[in-house]
Every structure is written in C-alpha cells, then in structure tokens.
Length: 112
Image (cartoon, rainbow, N blue to C red; front, side, top):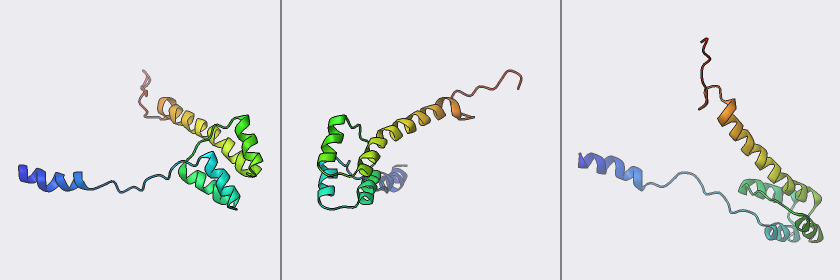
C-alpha cells in the first residue's frame, strides 16, 4: 500500500500547476509611462485586459491622466473596467442563486 501511495501520489503532488501566472496589475504609473514611451492605445488596453486590472478612478485620477497625456480612449476604457467587473460579479451571483435551472436552490414544484 505504501508503494502505491509513493508511486502514484508522489508524482501528482510534486508536479506544478500547468497554468501560467497572471501578469501583475497595471498601475496608473504604468499607464502613464507607457503613454510617455509612445505605446499605442491598443497596446495599453491589451495589457490592461491581459492583467485583468480593474480601476476605480476618481476625478483627481482622471485629471492626472489627462495632464500626463493619456488618451481619452484609454481613460474611458479604464473607467469602464470597474463597471464591467461589477456587472460580471452580479451576473455570477445571480446565476448561482437564481439563474441555474439545477442550481443550489432549485426545488421542484409540488405538482411534479
């Protein structure tokens, strides 16, 4: 029995996860530095998407980004990340509680 555990479980436990780690979040300073370096708007947006960064920007942050030369397209995308994340979270919760036909709170009706 010990040999089975060693031969089967040891390789499973010692192998690492096959997924690649998610890139680090893109900070406001990173966006500003990419803009000053001459990166295209699409490249900045793609990097924000790949890192799944969510921004909750205030008025001061928007003014700072505009003063640093960040385009309105990138700023608007950054503002939308919080809304998209909130909607996705609400959809996940709604699906879990109400949307799934065979979800955790599914109860057949008495006439079935």
